[in-house]
Image 1 (tube, rainbow, N blue to C red):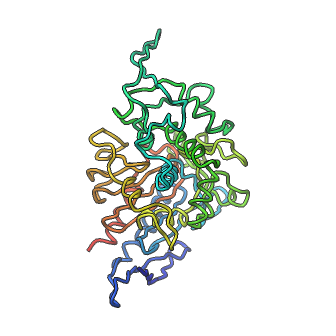
Image 2 (cartoon, helix red, strand yellow):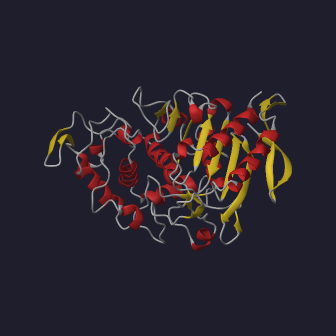
Length: 413
């Protein structure tokens, strides 16, 4: 299937904006139009610029695309406002928890190879998780433990239903110090009692996703970050996606901003995940730095059922398993109507910030306001890259909602 991108270049805020019409060859010399309203895409730039002028963000990079290619990629505002360094399309961002689905893809690659199954007991590969205990009672004076009703399964980590507790004191500074290995943090997670029986509740779990990173190491025999680089980033030509940015990449990193007591946008030193030259802990739950270009290639791979430019990363079956609802009726997510697949949040009932998306759309956000969502029914993905702390809820950000509304409008009849 061959994609053709018909380009129109429009000046906006001093940056060339790619907007256009994607058509996909369907055989017998016919082409089916895939995008007919490029003016709606051009409106994204103006909307993001307005958020900059309102002082909500310093700058943004936005990307919209289809399976056949990118149809909008633009940058507005400032990468570093104080230094008057403009935002550019190759600016890099801390994508934080947008790392989680990428870690899950690594796990599912091993599933495709027959080296594990999501239904396997985690202790089969990480014996430190044998015989887990659950907190039955906790007071200021005592804590009562009991055996878990069943073993932790790999699928429990993929869906945030394992019940793992937050990292305990002595380990809970690992994201800002990056001084412990995945083996060490996994052991700390295994030795902590579970908050609930596996599979009975949903609770967003950074230690759970980090443990998946350790699982990748044990099964593949490679460091987690080496596995992702060699098996995902290099094949997909995601050369700016890394856990340890080079000096050159650090110069392209967007400054993180927050708001002071007067509501003014100010630089906000990141205290969530430190960036160090050679981190011992990669943070599979949120440690990646990436770009709009790289994430677009990853999202196109997912939209194309695991393949891009002749390179197959995942089987179509694994993509389907990752992106279907795996949590049943359990209350999940940070907004109403959400469920979870393997590593991805899944739109169960579109409403609120997801009202414009189709049921079955999937994606993930990050702690600094970044977002990436895929609507397979519309053959559409959209990426928002900003660096803002202190948003009331990154998933409910009006910036995200505006991008999604304009992107969906561009592909609607």
